[in-house]
Length: 83
Image (tube, rainbow, N blue to C red; front, side):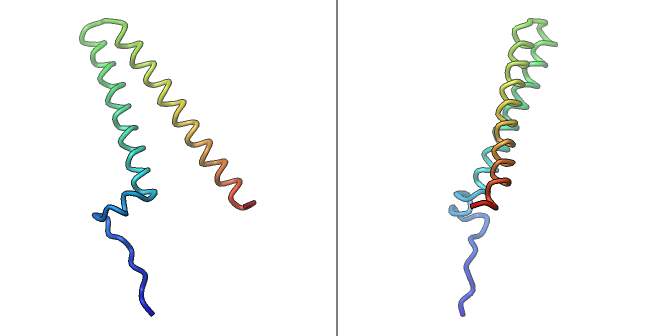
């Protein structure tokens, strides 16, 4: 019997699986965090309220997207046993 071949982490098919999706989500989360931190820093540096408003808006959208994502994960966990 032949052993199943598992693609190595450097292989392009490895990134096309769930790992690639998780990597993309982590990258977006890091970028959102950098944007929020940069906006707060710009507010402290310039005392211009629009940067604080931008940081708050980025935080809200990021939180909404994260909650929707986690809700979908929970729904998937609940519904998979029934399929």
